[in-house]
Amino acid sequence: MEYKKIVEKIIYKILSWYKGKKVLTYEKDRNNKKWQFEQLFVENFLRKNLDVTSVIDVPIGTNRFGKIIDQCPNIQSFIGIDLSDDMLNFAKLKNDKKLVLKKKDIINEKCEDRADLIIILRMLNLFETKISLKIIENLLSLSKKYCIATLRHDQKHYVIENKIHVQPIEEFKEKIISLGYNYKIYNFEDNRKGTFSILLIEKNK
Image (cartoon, rainbow, N blue to C red; front, side):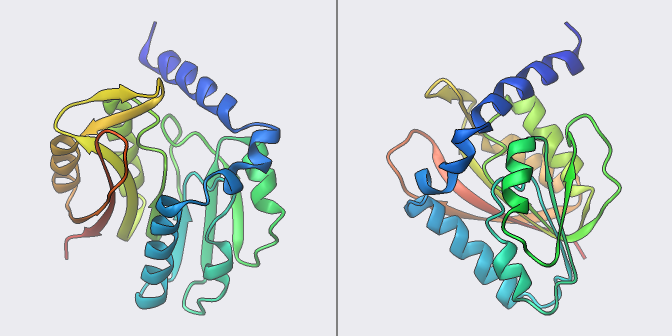
């Protein structure tokens, strides 16, 4: 089976996790300390970094950051990308003023949009390492300045709970550096295997 078809099969399976009634309870089910860690980090970054005038959130999911982005006068452009119709429809219901929604497969399709900040939350652990490294490469090509990504990682790749890919951290560090960016890692402690972190990635000047 060719690579593109393998990816499409994986995406189809993942999309089945984010359909129908599951979308309606997505935020409620995940409003925990890890969710709050992510939320506060992104909100504080947006408030402090006034050089951010544009944001791309991929996958947009239920649109966690539309409200805070509307409150930031320096941000003029906000694009939300997802492949799930149900997630896109849910995100649209929040009626955020700046948000423009786009349906796109960011693994196999080229994206013409660029932004100062790219947000990639809860995506890189859904795929095997090769695909997630391709996602990082594709999305960093859209970043003019910054990227905020989450990653559960360890020294080698393995899968937990039959769906969460714990990624080999050194391969991701090497990829980020090779693309002309540097990074800082902020860890969150929980009871799952691997280390859950926010990666703050910045383009080299």
